[in-house]
Image (cartoon, rainbow, N blue to C red):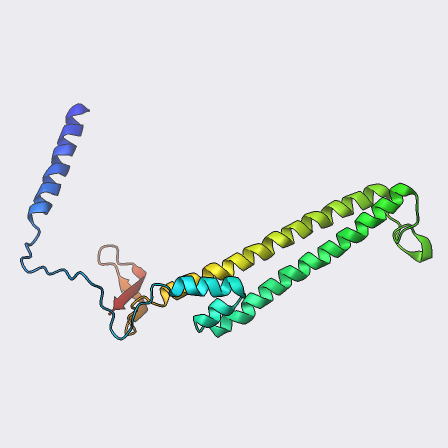
Length: 195
C-alpha cells in the first residue's frame, strides 16, 4: 500500500510540474494603477448617502438611487408589519384588561353578558400570551424591514457604480444527437455566453 501511495504521489507531482513548465511567458504585461470607467464617474460616498437617506425617511434612499418603483414596496412592507403590530397590541390590551377584571371578579367584555363570548381565566391568559408574542414578532419584523431597506439602498447605490457590459449574448439551446457507440439518442443542453 505504501508503494501505491508513493507511485500515485509521483505521478501527480510529475503532472503538476509538467503543466507548470508548459505555461507561456508574457513579456509585455502592463498593469495600470487606476481604474478607468468609460463615461461614468465613481462616487465613493453614494452608498453611504443612500443609506443615510433611507434611515432618515424610508424609501428616500431608493429615490436617491432613482429606483422609484421600490418605494411602494418599502411602504407596503412597513405598512403591513406596522398594521400587524397595532392589531396585535390592541387585542393584547383587550385580553389583558379582561384578564385583570376577571381576576378582580368584575364584569368585562368576555364574561358572556349581553350575548358576548365567554372566556375562562385560563383562556384569557393564553390569548393574552399569544397576542403578546405576535405583537413582539410584528415589532421585530418591522424593525427588520426598516433595516433591510437601508441595506438595500446602500447595496444598490454601490452596485450601480459597477461597469456592466450591455452587449452580452446568452444562448440557451437544446441539442439532440445519436451516440456513435451505443446508437441511442442523447439529449443535452447548450449554454453559450458571448461578450
